[in-house]
Image 1: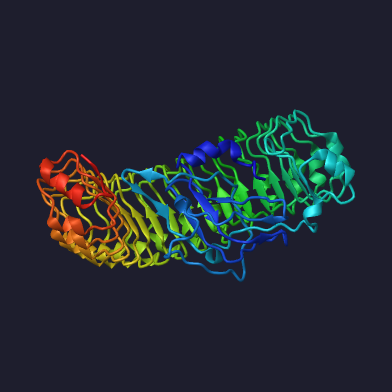
Image 2: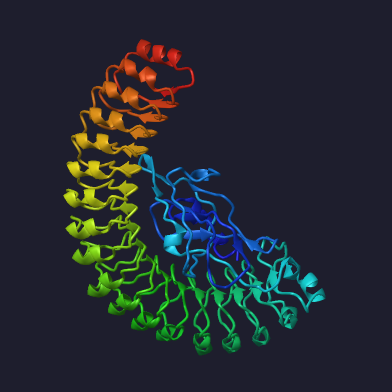
Amino acid sequence: MRQVLKKHEETYRSGKVPICYLSNNLTLKSMKQEIQSPAMSILSPHSLSAILITVTLSGTFSSGNVFAGGSMQPPEWMPSSQSSTPVPTQAPPGGQGAQGRRTGIDLRVPPVPFGELGIGGTVDLECGKAGVYHSLQDALRHASTACALLLDFPDSKVHFEEFPIAITSLKKLRVLDLSGHDIELLPPQISGLTQLSVLDLGGNALTDLPAEMGTLQNLHTLILHGNPLVEFPPSLWKLTNLQELYIGEIGLKELPAEIGNLKNLIVLHVGGNDLQSLPGTIGSIPHLTTLETGNNEITALPVEIGDLTSLRILDLDGNPIGMFPDTFGRLTGLLVLHADGTKLTNLPYDLGRLSNLRVLHVSGNELTALPTSIRRLDRLRMLDVSENLLQNLPMEIGELENLAVLDVHGNLLRSLPSTIGNLTRLIELNADSNLLSTLPQTMGTMTALEKLSVADNGLTTIPEGLGNAPDLKFLDVSENRIDYLPRAIGNLKQLRELRMENNRITKLPLTMTELTSLRWLSINGNPIQGPKIDALQLYMPSLTIYR
């Protein structure tokens, strides 16, 4: 399974797709998914969250303690919880992502406890380390106990152009990973693997599937991602125990209506195809939790999507849907919604009905306003409305008391509402590339703020109240019209990076010497006298000054 999206690792590393990292202990206990001591962080403001899960030889699934930015410990503000009734859902694994820096600020989607998301994963192989093999020869020598065969290339060091027919003699096999090879054809004899629960054929050269696959009634997870499949055999839709189906980037032009037959489906990935619509029967999959449709050509969502009351993660990125159907407000269990670059001109007023929403991405659209009902999204942690046509933010945005990350860069904002000061849990704010001339004094009450970027605006001053943000570590006020820095800037004892290039600043306040954590200062493009800079450098030898 490690190979499912390894071919797409560059996309993940580019920051175009956010990466989720789990910190947990996942045991081979049950095909149902549950998490022990979970926590997560998502990088980058684009596309669907991908969960990194690694299969290990010890018979456990574990991602290790990996968090955004590569730190080995979660930030102090990261909540953790345990799920008593977890939902079995998993997104395809991806490579470790980069920081995802955009226009002056590195945005992380705020952590959402997996106890709330109900995401994670364990697989019951009913066998331990002794039953897991990475060599076909070894598995054949122990055919009576071989339970999992992981021949994903290049990890297995063996490359197949044909399906190894000998595998079909491993009658007790429950997990088979043949991803990343050049296999063009599956033999009918695969029907003999009646105990198979997980089949990963991602990244091969399959153009067709045998009808006999329909006999694999114990199959729970089927991964066909990245194969040039032309069509599916009708028998595929008889796999009624299937819980996870990955058929992204296979050139699919139409999702058959028979998808509605898979009543136990929990995860469906159809991203990166040529779909222009989704069948209405998709609404008849009662347990569907994750639906990833990003980067297709879907022009409208079926009204039946409102029937997916179990849906928790929905990715619509890159589909020109234009609007949400009237039934969309019925998705009250939705936790993560990605709709970047979908040609939206407005958000439905009943958006407020999605009261469980934690992450909302609607960047790169044509939104001119946000509905006032947004106030009801009181569990929202991440809001990305960047690169739209917003001229103002509603005063009600100040009621999003749990908001941790707000990205409004690339709009037409002339001011920020005074109520923004009510966002006392906000950690990151990106308001780059707007038309701001001032910042509200109430920003001084945003005591949790760690990163603030307001570059490329028309600011002439920085509010004194900003000195009341004790945890501020990153401040970017470059490309403005600022002619002085307030003395209160010396109160920012945690500030490590200050960017203020291309302003009108002629001198630095003496309180700058109190910034004991400052390591990077960018002042190029300002008429500051050289001797004063030299004196600052002498006083703060650990400071790097870019001028």
